[in-house]
Image (cartoon, rainbow, N blue to C red; front, top):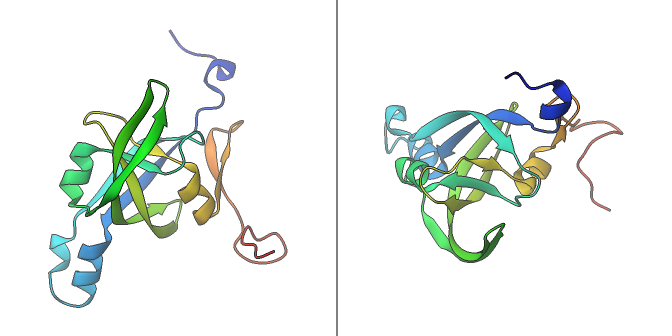
Length: 147
């Protein structure tokens, strides 16, 4: 059964690349070869403005070797639970990149791109066209503000 546009409207997915920032730094300084940089590209990642952070399943976090930062309480539809926070990941989306932390999801869960990285990278969901809109970094319409 094929869904009509009105039935799928509102779902935005994107391609992201996640790289271990520590590996990048070590390679830049010549301590490891570039082939040892742990990185993964994920297609069709759900843009979820109900999530505050980037959320990744445990298996991806282990593959990337991301360092542990701590634990936090996380609200989910099923209730409150403790989740691990991992740090020092380089996130690249729509030609923009930054260093972020992420919340660990159970193994096998789908990754989620949350609000904090979206805002920090100047991206916003375009629900009608089902894609991310890249906001301007320069000029009078810049998304960067200090008020």
